[in-house]
Image (cartoon, rainbow over all chains, first blue to last red; front, side, top):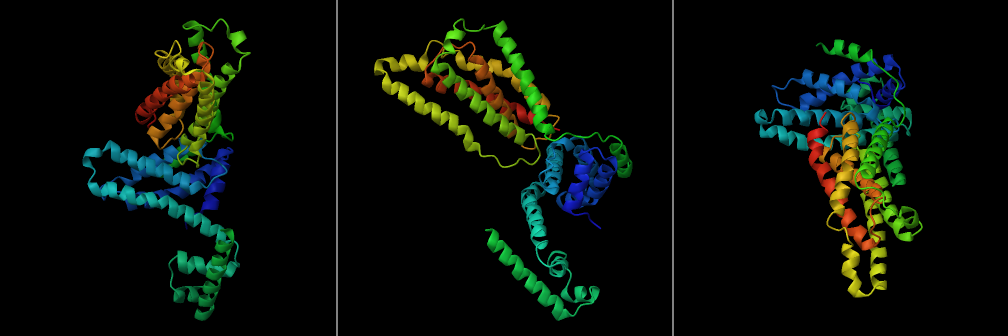
Amino acid sequence: MRADEDQLREWMIGGLDGNAADHTRLLAAIVPILTAFFRRRMNEGADVEDMVQDTLIAVHTRRETYDRDRAFTPWLFSIARYKMIDNFRRNRRTVPIEGLEEILVSEGFEDAVSARVDIESLLSQIPEKQARLIRATRLGGSSIADVSAAESLGISDVKVSVHRGIKALAAKVGKTR
Amino acid sequence: MNTQDLIDTLGRDVRPVPRHAVERKIALALILGIIGSTVLIVATLGIRRDLGAAMGEADFWIKWLYTASLAIVAAGLTFRLARPEPARFARWWLAVPVVVLALIGIAELAAAPPSHWLAMWLGRTASKCPFLVLGLSIPILGALLWSMRRLAPTRLAAAGAAAGLTAGAFAATVYCLHCPESSAVFVLTWYSLGIAFATGVGALLGPRFLRW
């Protein structure tokens, strides 16, 4: 299971305060995240493990540049993106044009991550059941039928909860504007 | 090396990091650079002999406040660009000292007869002032780049330019100890030109020296 923003941030801050166990947990937890990040953006032939290790070292040696008051994942992805662009620059001759396009596309990725963080904070403000079902159906991508089976709830119950939750979220967003 | 082994190795070296570690490092570099540039000015150009008297005049403090306020805003920009994911920064703050000094300059020109304008603008040192500011910025820019390369700037040209701007503005602040000029239009033109040179040098050096 993937650790979420709050968990990662807690471990990061623990590491900054000198807790080695937290720091090790953090590094282990970001390996799958980074692997997915590079796999999605780099060519078939790219050495993803090498990139992940490079980024782990950067996260470790540059950890003092993390600001405890800000979100962790955007910081992590900025480092990963920098390492990827630096890698492209180093191997400029062998990089096909597609690689560059992917960098341009990935520019929107950070926004998506920030949006995700915002959604999590909104979800925490609505009833737990609605939030859980929205996470499963709308963010996790499971079907209504699967979720109703997994949660042993009626299909209409799931539908109604998701619908009410979305409405509540829309109202919250309207209020904060 | 296996990724798990790497993690175990890195996990053995976990020193606590103080809050605002980035700001502390850059501030330390700035202090060292400013000391370097002050030593440079004392050793080469010398301090103006009438410094004590000049410090009683408003001109001196207008000049000094212009360069010092620019330096402080630029340092704020440098702090941010030394991090991988810079926080938003209202760059137009940089324009505030420039606009204020321009208004003072216009008021000074309006109060003087047009026949004096050229002399006020060029002073006696216009041709060397920008280069002296650039020269004095070298110790500060060197120290800033050296400290930033161990941090994590991701926009290298912008980070280099911010370091250059900071170095140039602090160098101009130090240069006030020597410079005998007093008109606001002089400072606005030639000091700013020197600061702009330093910014340009920083922008060129950034992508080469700040890579990590």
